[in-house]
Length: 177
Image 1 (cartoon, rainbow, N blue to C red):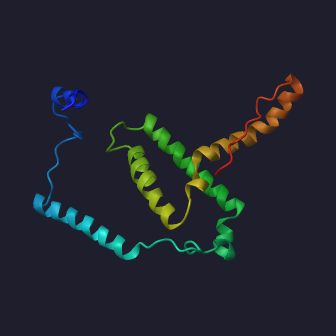
Image 2: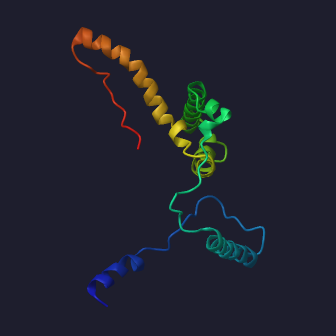
Image 3: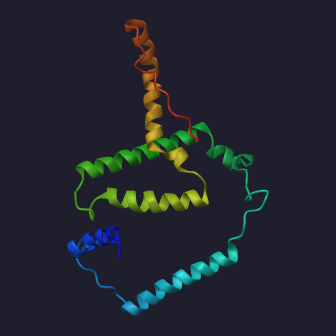
């Protein structure tokens, strides 16, 4: 064993047992452990079988696409008023989650913020984006808030330039890639 490897083992020897994910109270499974482990193993095996059966190399012409703007409902959903409503609702939900996080009940079991961020935000948004498309590009509350602030500051900026000779409101958003 080299000195570097021996030195790398020192933290493993010195550090006491780690309490990995040991928060909250102890939870016992409602089913026997062997049944739980067999079910988890079966999910992994079934996932590998499904990948082997259905995942293929990409076609030269790309993946199949469907132009939603060729349909009337697609054009309605892509209209400016519909997008404004979606952005307003997303920003309102964002403000509500921030308010609940800062001023709401600080118990994670009684607060809206943890469920919204972890379940709806991380898991739900991933599924919706996989099935529908890039929803975050439309419903991003940071982008919507910045765009509203930019719209509000632009006329104010023109007045500041005329009065004071500097352009404090000349803010540019980076282009989306």
